[in-house]
Image 1 (cartoon, rainbow, N blue to C red):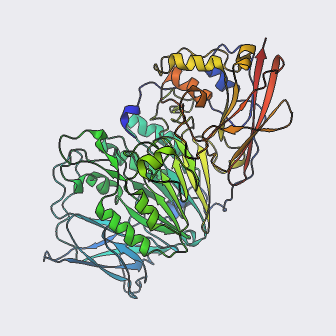
Image 2 (image 1 turned 135 degrees about the horizontal axis):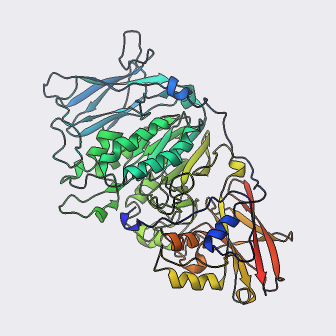
Image 3 (image 1 turned 30 degrees about the horizontal axis):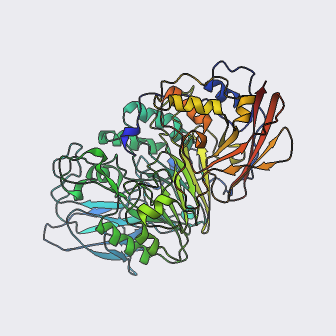
Length: 627
């Protein structure tokens, strides 16, 4: 996302666990006390998410991973317009095809434009041209090698003279076209299984070495404890760093903490901004992290990783002059890739700038210009789209409609699920430091930093979001929502301070409700981060009959609803006091108007949120009605 959203103020976010939330009569610490009030009581309950047994114990991946590289056979220097090679079974895992190692038939190989499949000997032949990236599409049942940092090795850059002069180096000269580029593969039970767990990490976006350490001690430390993504691996969908591409090696090293292969996509902060030719705007990314677009298979999922960032090459150009788009070469590759993918596969379409999203639903810059053509390519197929960029969490379902999508992008409604994955950096590493040593960084929609996982069974997908610092295997007791109280008094405070993010005085007694508040409309709010169309939220006050809360953003073709009455009070009270963005709009907020005749004293609201898959999460909030 554009760095104008960044702030040097760091908002405080006390850990909010899935538990009963109690209030005191007078909360002297204001918003901080509200957050502290959410940290004690009875555990939430939920229907468990589908999951497969762990593939390995921590540490086993490091010892047993298939490590190697693409085999590049130097050429003679003679001009040649064709690149040849073979995809082979690397039985001894030395990255070189030996006499007893057979070629693999039917594997897809591409030069970033054309797509071919290997013959009975595993051989392929592709048109060659300057500044191409040749890559293999990993088939299910096989695994490409990884390097010492667990980064998948499946491509070769051909740029004979190297990149033009670039601040961050770009690609070194590769010389003459190789005689052959051979792709080694090793058999894999984990990528063959129809049950896959695909980890999606949005916007690591490290601007400094200090922020590299935040990412290391936060999300990557969490991932180091997980063993469920060995097959599908981890895909980091753009803004790997924040403009300073010299941080690629340090950020890349974080993947060495993983228990599975890592792949990367570029974002609008991963550009060579000084490139004067659009063909070289991602050269440093390609040199450090891999192709700017590609595909791979795991189980019955075909993951299509797209570069949805285009940057003008006329100089001088501002860093914010990018737009959401695919160039013609990538579009041609996408058509060919989809045409070569069996129709019974699930298409997982991943990108940095989302095809469409809620946060920027009225902006052509922050959505993808070719979205309608992409929908046409995928018509009739099982598909799901993933995006990052917005530093928010969105779970958009087939049939959802927004005014901006129709007016700006020409799309009436979503044909399949679109998920915005949130950000590992949260709100650009803003906020006060936690006891664990990293910023709270509450996101633009009030969600917390974390990672998305797609639990795939065949072509059926169940999504789950894991908050940074939580145990991903314990989805039953995971933190999935903020509960708060939106009163007229809060809304007055919001309006008085919204222009001074990071400098507001704390909101006093956030869980105290006066008679005037009840007379002037007060809502109990539930910000259910992965909530979507098809989700339900019910509230029981003091053990009474459960009543359905109302979703504020219906997703029925209306415009985006913005302001204090559509905000998350829990998140806003952190952001206005300690800095960050402002959670004043979201597509996953439910609210219930509190009865005007509530008796004075303490009350407990029991909130049960049910997601589109039928999983239930229950939390409690205690508030006080004062005479």
